[in-house]
Image (cartoon, rainbow, N blue to C red; front, top):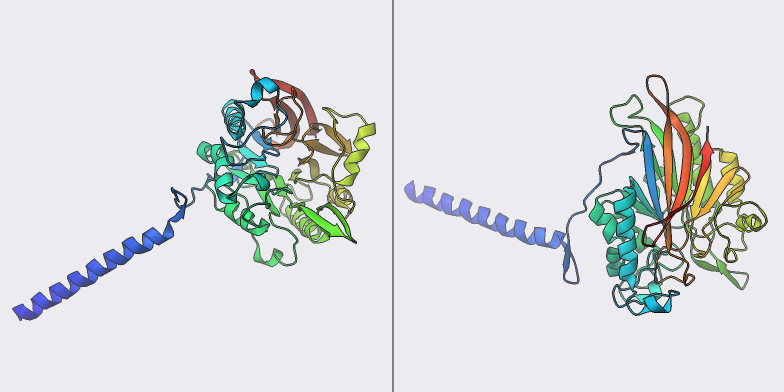
Length: 387
């Protein structure tokens, strides 16, 4: 009996040792290696997105970082006195300054996050470009521009990679399985912003953020043009908007929404002849295909403002058919710009109304820009929408 017991013990010990060996090997396989860095399992932000205790929700919009490969990637369109010491690191430093100074609740990257033609490794460039956002621990999301896919990853791979990065809340496409079918592009999704913690609106969505893929370039009847938002995307957006109205904290009322995409729509050209806040310094580069994005937003009724990038030297806000369209202005130093015209970022602030005893819905949406100068100068503050 003693011999049998000893054999059983040895057998059990061997099994446990083998299982321990397998656990170590499997754990190593679960770690994704990239270069000399090991990417840990994704860190997630505190969710859901929600307004602060003071009834505010602040978004930092970052348009056109055009990140390359870091310190070896030179700046474009800066003063000659700045050029020798200017690189992608200036973009990184600007992003860190904005996060530290504005203390946003959320960061929205508006496309052309990396400049594919200037990097041999898209994943490595994205890790560096989004690095300050991940280090901050803030929730952030992104859409793609027309240059992101020009390196080693296609658009689907890029969005999937972004969705797996620390603190990212981006999605490759809508989360609900039933809504994934027949939607063009990658990076179409909707995020809800809930009421302040501990308030009676803590479980109610008060603001919606729509993200859309505006594509890159396409050839139509032999003519090359920029990408555009397709009818399938607008159909999905209509369904989402209708569902939001049905689930509103006030039956029959719509919660306001903001939209983010990269390439502007053709109607923005009209703003050259209208009153705007900011500067209109270059022609609007967009597709000659018009699928009725503006008409769709007007029909939906809940989109109050749209935030775009692409044209780096435009940083204005203008109103078309009751909806504000705002450029972010060029953020990144490897993207084209204008020497002597500082790189810039846009900040968006949503504020809740305060009743006699409790918070109400969104009362006001404001915006302003910050310049990458010595003082992070604040300019062009304006109210976009209020009840």
